[in-house]
Length: 118
Image: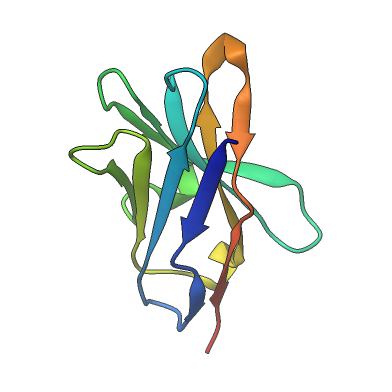
């Protein structure tokens, strides 16, 4: 069955960095895009960043622009990364990877916890 697996979360001090990884496998169709979302305690799920599969173009939530970078594996377009620099306490959340298959639906990972605290 389809698998979407994230890793790389953890506890980091403000100003620190983390690099999240996500691999989507056994997909029934090609992806339109790969994306990262997050959900902070007591809040709804929030979109963070997207990379379109066809051309590698990217988009970011305004509050993470210049601090976060989405990228992908050179040989596997369904493996993406989220490099997070200059982390702030408000970045604390569970981070989820999403594999967007356009009209064929999408798939979610189980999430990885990121905690920014001194």
